[in-house]
Amino acid sequence: MSLDDNRASRDAILSRVRKALQKDRVDAQPRVDADAYIAAHRHGPRPVQSDDLIARFVERARDMASTVERIGALAEVPEGVARYLDSLELPPALEAQKSHQGVCWSEFAHLDWTRAGLAIEARPTMGHDRLGITGTFCAIAETGTLVLLSGTDAPTATALLPDTHVAVVRADRIVAGMEEAFALVRTERGDMPRALNMISGPSRTGDIEQTIVLGAHGPFRVHILLLA
Image 1: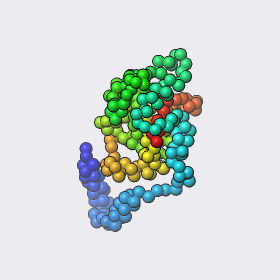
Image 2: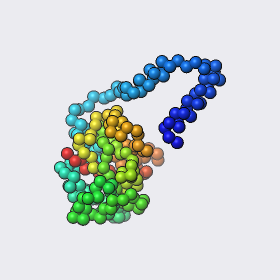
Image 3: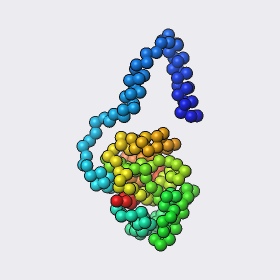
Image 4: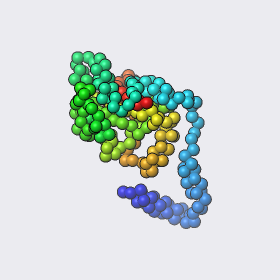
């Protein structure tokens, strides 16, 4: 069902409600005021934070149990991924998760993965892949959050199914807060995509005895390569 179909259905329902309430005449001004308020995208109270968005993002990302490495060029991504994988100290029973094989978004298909000792395929994950490498639409400094938009070349599952998620964040795509992130989506994409995912560190839950467990519903670990 399209957005226009949704609006038509909503208007038909509200019309029947007004008729039942014997309020067939509609005052247009409240609707105009409401539409203007929504279009303004006003921001509520917000915490004061540093003007250095990069430093704030790194700090908050680490607070959320992500790890961060800064790199200087896109070509350094494969070596950055390899360094991170080699640095993992896993118990023997989990050593199989330390895989140098994985999948990436198509924007990274041209990188020299073989030279870094990695076997990375540019395809959607089939569910058994241990490593997923993605880009990001933008990142939020206030919360250390990655913002991913779904699309043909940006399959969401790459960030959600593997045990290890490595995300490439461009420093010039770090925004102050969630409000700026949504404004950027509206400016660059117009309509919202089918899915917008906000990722703040590894998957976690505290459902059992209020004990935090990582990797409950997604990756055990999130590593960020910050491209400055």
